[in-house]
Image (cartoon, rainbow, N blue to C red; front, side, top):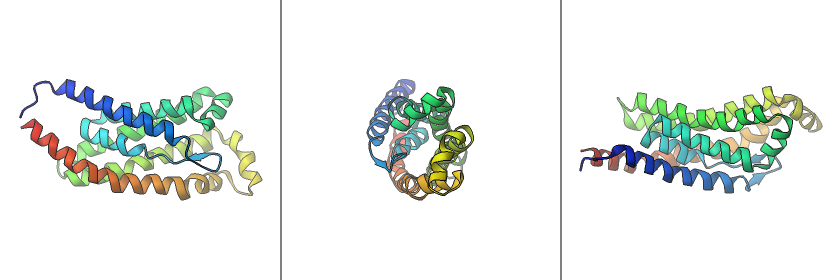
Length: 196
């Protein structure tokens, strides 16, 4: 069955994915490891939405994630008091890139190999999310976090790597890499049938 109004379907699907992203972002901010790090399973619907709908949807879903963190997360509130613009970059722009870049790579790679494109997008999403986050925390907020790192006897880089790299990144990475391709395959098969 060929879709008569593909644009309307994409908007509706984006809205559904956005609701999932919002709920996971909002409630994920309450699941914390220590005082700074929260576990984000939100990359799964962001990457999945970008794969299924397109790069603009991935960026939009990432923006929903970033805005939710920006306005509801306790750590973000601390950072907003330091510098609201840098916090916006670290929350919203970072999350938009973490949705847009994997979807764009999927679109490029899937022309030749859809499964490889799905795996690459699933791998790249959490990496972009974490690397840009680390950049923002170390470069933009280094003065804010340095005393906390020094109190723990670590360099700022090692403090952040142990704070998010060891646990948060691994959980986010592994869940996104394992779950997203599994969910993407039936969705992409359905999409192909609907486009015929």
